[in-house]
Length: 395
Image (tube, rainbow, N blue to C red):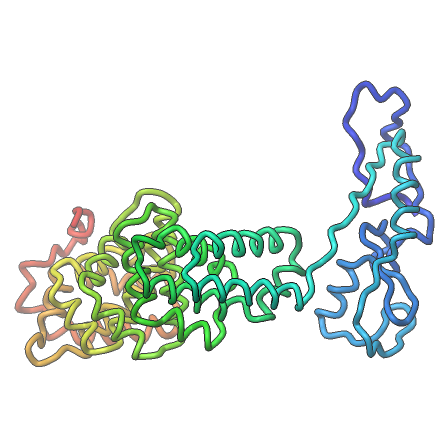
């Protein structure tokens, strides 16, 4: 077989190099699944050797048999075949003149026991509020995760989100300012582990944890804000009203979200603003959340402004948020949101949304909003620019 995996060195001083020469891989060095040169040969209980990445993918896809023999695999242990790997490396060196690079010696994958032991130490450091010890342990976990996707999966499947969320809650309960570094390190690690397990969601949704994330929105840099926004979005995705209410009880959270949605500083902030819009939409699902939104004069104009801007998702969440504010207005605010939306050009934008196409849910909400607004149009006709130029002004 012609070498498909090998990388050729781009070295002008390598006089013996033959760029177009075909290098044939010995059959015993090829993975039976991909027929490519094995980089990390492992042997199954059936006695057949495969490349680790290929056979792991085979099992991840739901297969329970040995790919070559079709035998049922009862023991999924993968034993590194060091002898074969050394032979492959020697072959690579022998063929280096033909541009074949030596395969690196693979790192040993972590085991569930390794993860459990590390998480136990993380919990110990959190209980004793040893922030520097905890930082070192979380960084070790991050290093493991960067070595392979297999390591990432092993970390998440063995309870990392629950342990880290508990640690985050412990340090946040103690002091946000004093523990800000370890809190940011933990939150950064959690960001690539989502979705959360139920226990982790409870810990990260505690009052102390939510206060910490809102503090991040106020005081951290752009990356710190984004991490907090991602975590808040994940917590609220469970639809637990207790978390929504606890978040709304934090002073200034509504204004913080509005400010984030309105910012256009960088691509990172653009992504964060969309996530902030998702969070705002979740908060508007309850009476207290809508009450806070009504009290902010920027809420409706900003939501209307975001329709048909940035992305289809931005439009969907903006329409959903306006629909919730108009559909479920309390008696004290009855008609206020509808009139305000009309004044800033929502009617024309909603018509455009229906014309350009959208999801069925957004279409239903836009249609209902148009029906709700229609009775107020005659009274406010003079406030609406019929040629749609009104939308070009900056709010």
